[in-house]
Image (cartoon, rainbow, N blue to C red; front, side, top):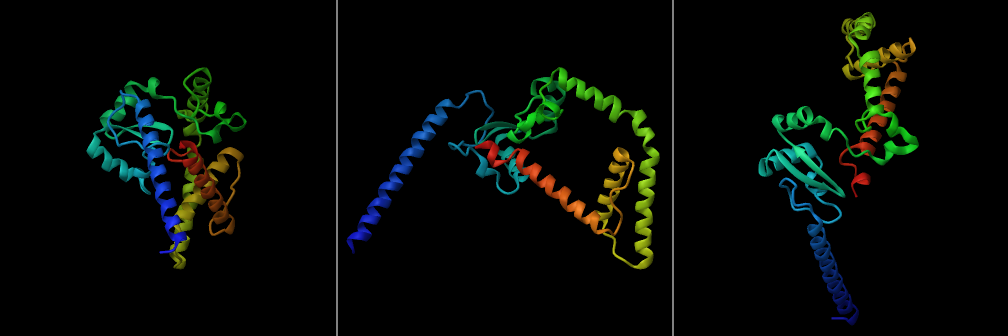
Length: 233
């Protein structure tokens, strides 16, 4: 056996030993700082916590974990401690009976750029600004009078959607339900806000706009989502 190969094996063995010692020390310190009043949950690794246990389908992984640890369990998503409620009863207890205690949430860094967090009812803590925004939404945007006033507009857009489907049926063309529904929703929003239609059925602009919106939704999910790696480590 050559001396170079022997030295390489020795170096690799020492490196693996040092890494194991380092991980053991981190784990001991991490467990020592762990709060003692958390619900049961998985063993939490240093730095990454339980992120790897979520897998590519977190909702299915959480369902399986709840069968083992119960309806209330704790997870560590990087540096963020999360308490998961898995039954309607526990969710009602948190969201209905103790909504003020649990209403605030950690705001991702992307929402804090240029002060966007202070203008969003989603990320603001309960307070004067949050109550003012909620009042505006309740009275000016989603009130019964506002919804009744836009009933005719909604009926008009649905009639156009029905006519498009009927035309496709009569001509023997396949109907892209997803694209047609997106065009209908987009035109309803644009007509409500700007009094004009932004797209038409069977238009390249509609598909382009759909791709842009889906791209924005994907970026928002990756930036603001619960399992965003940039926010948890």
